[in-house]
Image (cartoon, rainbow, N blue to C red; front, side):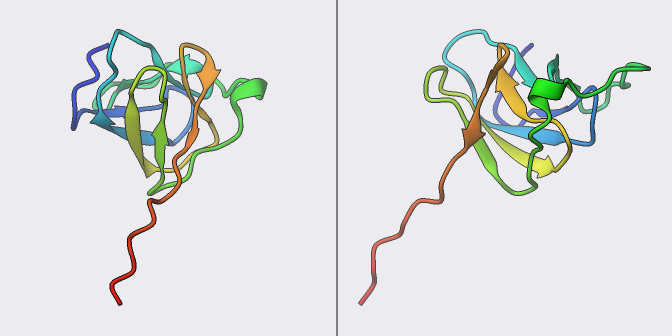
Length: 102
């Protein structure tokens, strides 16, 4: 899986679509809903469904980052599956507070 900045991926089991913002420092498996993501233009496999322990959902417009691997992705379309790396769930990043301008 070549996770280059700007590359687009989608879940194999739900509607989630992701864009890589920052690539990982080493090779990892980006997953959604318990299965590895597939290239945006790829076809989803038949009969696959979201794993119960990876059904936390993903929200459009939110960034998901993993400090351990350095990977950061932007969710461009939300879905039922949660984003994970090598089977380990990763969470949304908090918005950075901007300094006051007064």
